Length: 413
Length: 90
Image (cartoon, rainbow over all chains, first blue to last red; front, top):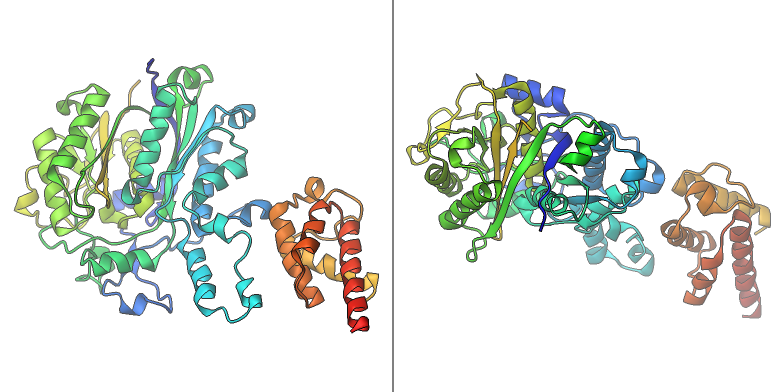
């Protein structure tokens, strides 16, 4: 099968530390945390031990027509906004956008929990037919797991293939990876890829009940999560969205597109076992497969975006895998330290942040990394901001279910 | 319930639910205002609220051919008359 080169021609993110390049770069440079106090939901929030959340707390304004809004829950608003920005930035010809050679790879962990909650409320409380009819004709369209992908395709008239992975924390890294493969092997000429998740206390409750959430810094939200730090005590759930435009290299070059980076490799595998516990063999294998797929050596990688959720075991296993595969040379960024774990969006948001750092020539330090856990010391941590060119980078993400991904990107073409 | 009452309520529904102000009487609602099958289902729910009665599946299916404001008003007028006749017979 012929392999084509794939480049990134646009990117955008809505994150707890800002919306778009200017705000996000400023937050990374200044060490601003986007973690704040958990909002009350009048349902389950009062029972949750973890009182922190990576929140998009700045006002968002949208300009979506009613015909689109009616099938969109909060998660689709985030998704469509970053998609809109990426399409505007890429400046693809409108005939191409609707012509069938552009597809969408986009996902969320479980559609819109806000809408689902409203449906369940009726489900449990409906006393008569009138209240049953409160379940609107569009509620499924707002809450289904592929709501982000199809609302994007509807809003912009995109007619190519739809990939809507829903693999928890690897959702959007899979979106980019499978989008990359679709373009690489000629199935599409461009793919709009990413992921989104909205504010959701149910996700916090799930991790809280698994004792995986941070609880020790409830009064000082900005001091958690603490990837690789000895005092880390768990992850912080967050919200946001990220998107990139992938295009076939010759097509992008011919039309004079700005090329931000090349995607040079992708790997995805499964641990084939426990659905929750991190697996050293599985993760190590993913990192090796990513390098093999990119046809580069570990020593070629300058910077790794670690999944680094700040759980006790997850960080150790990941550090061991990175140490075994990459050694101590490449810098390791732990971007969740700024915003928490944006769930389905994390792979895409972290890719966008890596692109920004590549463009601006700096490496954001890991926030709250004050005392490196010796069990995580076999990698090159970045406790302070450094100016450093980044040519080749790896972005790795791991999910419940035992799914692992590694994405490799390179700045120069 | 007069035809004018029905028209007034339908215009209210269009403004409130579909953000369409004063839709024209004879234009194709899909072409002019992007009114689609999802909107049609929502409109049927609004009509049920307005008439204060449930529509039968057969009545709902009749609505699937509606394309204009005038046809909506005709449809509601027909439903209202049907219910009035049924009430008088009882």
